[in-house]
Image (cartoon, rainbow, N blue to C red):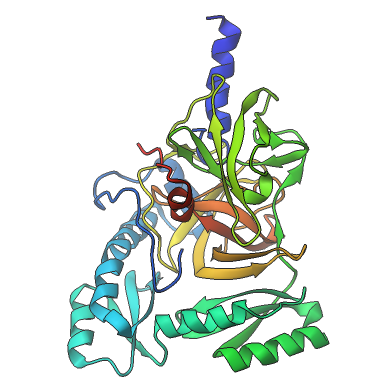
Length: 390
């Protein structure tokens, strides 16, 4: 094989690794099965991940290690605590200050139920509404016709309400006020103001180390056997995909947007997949070992072809987002991580567990913002794919 061909293949791995992997949550009432459940002590965190957490959270190395260990414990406890609470389950989140999982249980739960939840190791908070009731309330809001000034809505488990985000400049708009009136009739609603409307993060063709489809640049999400997953708004089924050097990678085999925002691309022509999240030289690359869902409050990091590696926290699961172009996407996970154009499709990872692919958000990585991702387990289940893990 010619030397130039070998070089092409090596760089291809980074490309398909592109946004987080080289090519290599969920409603409160129902979590999807992870692909792998390693023990909390199975593998240490990568040096790169610890470096990023120290930078973005202001932690020492020891504090970052302790937080990751506590988050792994919380992730392991959550399914048992959910089962123990039964119909009284009101949601769960990771309390970073306490380093423990908090589980909401309805105030009418029997004392034996509270004891069973505490026995799992979780803290208990009593609330008025169950997760099932809140999900049903949010579903009623989903059926309303949201105007452009309403950017998103979600169940906030910590406040036990449905939170509706409204663009500050549009708060007094008649259509926005009518929507809020109807939403309050449908659910226990709290309104939050945000500075701008969210948008998807695809970009026009510019330099970098991404993938391209037509004149759109996006980032690779996670490697699966036979290809990679990414955002649905980056390309339609049947569209061809090229790499950083414009050589052919493969084809979109499936894509869904709006309503969902996921897709998968088959790869061939000398490209291969590896179970790695690219650190872009900012941090060392991170191996992917599974897809256990991180709870609200857990740390999470994102890699993309524009802004590379940034970290933040999980803010909410099962959020409905009304993008600025009128596209509505359901069941996204909200984070405090920033992103910019071209980062779409890139990977979100918590510890060594794949979480999802970048959908969109507001703000940027200079002034800050919020970003949503499409949970990866839904993509794997939809297309019958297997995550490529280390």
